[in-house]
Image (cartoon, rainbow, N blue to C red; front, side):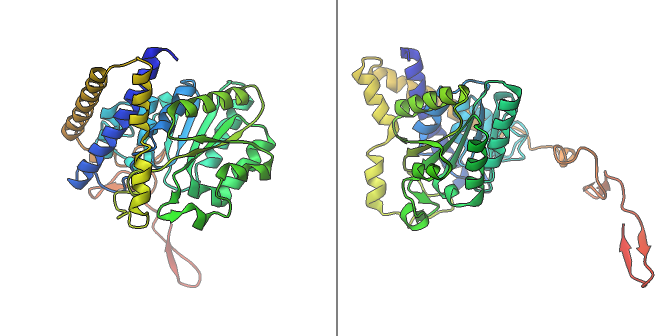
Length: 348
C-alpha cells in the first residue's frame, strides 16, 4: 500500500473510535434511544477488511455495525442522524443503531437477529455466482453466532455450491457476557469449518494490515471459484456488550490487558517507525476526526424527525387493511362482520 492508503487506514480506525465514544455520550444524554452496541477495540477488523474488498462487493454485518458503515464510506453525518432517529439518517431514521444500510454502497446492513443474516449472505453469494458478477460477499458475525443452526446451514450450503463468500467471526472472547469457553465446545472458531471441508484461517484482529492481507487473499480465492472461507479474527471489545451492559462479567485485569494491545496506537507506531507520519501529523488527523464527529452530531441534532405521514413507507408495496395515522385511515377498511352458521361473527 502507498503512504496515503496506509494513513487512511489509521484515520478510519480513529474516526470509528471517536464516533463510538461520542455515540456513548449522546446515548447518555438521551439523544440516542434503543440499543447501542459499540465497536471500540475492534476497529482494525472492519477497516482492514473493507480496504481489501472492491466497492461492488457485498457487505453483510451483525448489529455491531457502526464501524463497518463508516469504513464502507457512509458519512458520519448520515450514521449519526440514523442513531438520532432523524429523516437524514441512512434509512430515514427507521433502523437506528442495529440496522444501518446503504444499498448504493452494497452495504446490506446490520441485522438484529443473531446469525439471521448468514443465509442472506449465502443468497447474495449465490446471485453473484449465478450472474457471474465477480463479486465476493463479506459476512461478519460474533463468536456467539457460531453455535446456532443458521451458521451451520450457511456454511454447508456455501461449501456445497462453492459460493464466493467470506464468513468472518469477530472473536472478541465473549458472547454478550459469556466467555467463549463457557458457550462453545470448540474455542478456536476457525476449526468449526472442518465439518464442511471448508477453508479456514485465523488472524490477529488487532492488526489492520494482517486483516487486510487475509481478506485480500480469501477474496482472490473466492473470485477464482475456489469457494467460501471462514476467517476468525481474534480481538476484544473495550466496552460492554451494549450501553445497557454493566460489564461486570469480564475481569478488569483482562480488559486492561487487551487495552494494552489497542489496534489504533499500535498502528500509529507502525506509521511512525516507517517515517510515514510525524507526531504532528497524527495530532492533525485527530483534530480533523474530532471536527468531523462534532459536525455529525450538530447535523443530526438539527435534522427533522421523519414526517408522520411516512410511517408506513418501506413496509408494504400497497396499503393494507386499517392502516391509520393519527386516526385517519390510509389503507382499505376491513370487511364487515361475517356471520357463520353457528352464529359466530368474525371480521374479514
